Image (cartoon, rainbow, N blue to C red; front, side, top):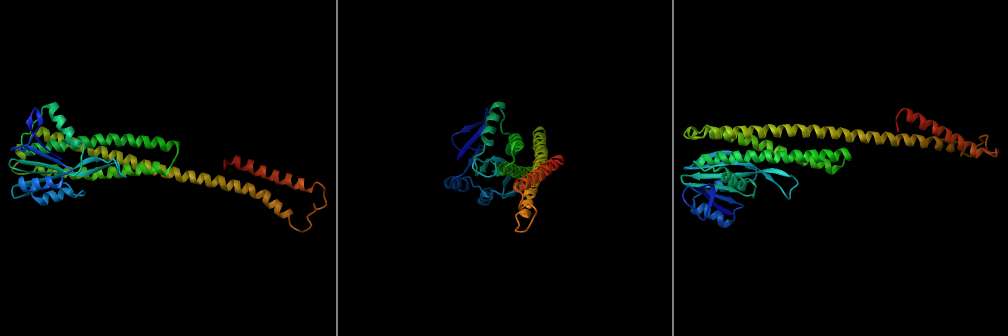
Length: 308
């Protein structure tokens, strides 16, 4: 899907391409790919790099084209991992500015609405890049709040009953936090490289750069905190599961010992040898009573030792 955006009251839509507009492409088709490469002149190598879901954040310059790739958060609807990150490629030269993402995310529509509400316009290409980085950091924090709620829900369920499904839910969240941590570190390195561009660093809005740094740092710290909490929870519940298994095995062993007492007595008096009770009228009931008495003694002993 290809859309065009330009300065207005905020960043507003325009019907077709015009100089200095922003061309936003999500889930590009083959026709849109040819349009970007053949008509706008976007280098095909840059386009192919964005298509790689594992591509790392970086900035490149080639024949007048700037290529900036950053990682943005993405909420999966049909995956084993609830949250991950995907590449957003930004390519620009002179009056051409293109952003490409092979996934449909919530970030870009929200960014457009935010610029409309705050009447924010594009000063230059790097200004828009920094604002997109700021928006991605804010969305990292939004998704981290949702992850925190998921952790609390899984913790509540684990307190009631420990099931494999509940532990697997925590494991999926832990994978999401690993993706977030790696991507935020890459975006942080990318920001420092953009800041230190020799020919452009004096043109940046210092307040905007500071806002991006603050949001990135906060997202990194929040991710690290949630990751540490989750690691501690996983270790704690692993110990709880092991302890519960030990309790069950102890109870089963105690029951086996109690049942072994009458079995042993019955086995001794069931042998085909003289035992002193073969001619006694009440011999069977005496042996049964003695077996019951010893079994009850074992039960009382184990209960006092809290083995039941």
